[in-house]
Image 1 (cartoon, one colour):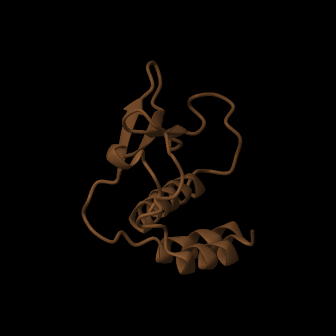
Image 2 (cartoon, rainbow, N blue to C red):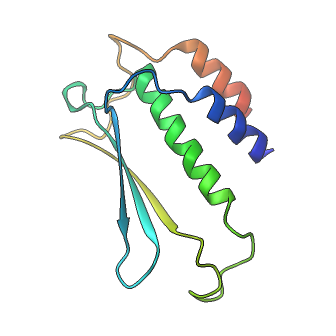
Length: 124
């Protein structure tokens, strides 16, 4: 079910244009080969409110993260040498400027059709 959901989300998550409304940075952890992914909502002038473009870009990023994590070996990690391909240790979601996120952008709200189709995929 998770794989089906991820595949459908990936098909739906198409960036609308090249504006950087979401930024990503990978930071290596000290004394480890692991990384932390920092996802930054980048609409500080709008207090990082969600609009359709931001929703699409976030969905695309999380789709890529899901695909990366699914590619990891399913066996538990016993020590650092057991699973070198598991690079992603954590994901941090933050906002640029003074606000994390003030909700939906009422001047350009997220597309309700996109939200409804996303709910059906996730079975919320």
